[in-house]
Image (cartoon, rainbow, N blue to C red; front, side, top):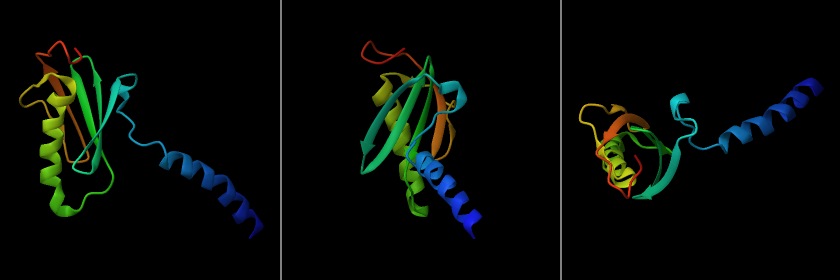
Length: 110
């Protein structure tokens, strides 16, 4: 029993550290510009590197909410980046999507 308690004491801080990490980008997006936005009570994190973007929804979503969340994520990409989403480039679901952008305005990032 003592050995089990010792392992639990080692595991618990590591687990808590991982829970607090939040959104982590895909390997390509490491070092990318990170923007966090709250929309309709949900938190989204967008990573942009060059002409590629990744948007991640934080938190739990119930089964009937996914379509609306996906639509919000698609709307947030041009709002946050100031760029136009390349049609047909978006891949993913209501938890995480990646795509390409083009025609960035001067207020957005290139």
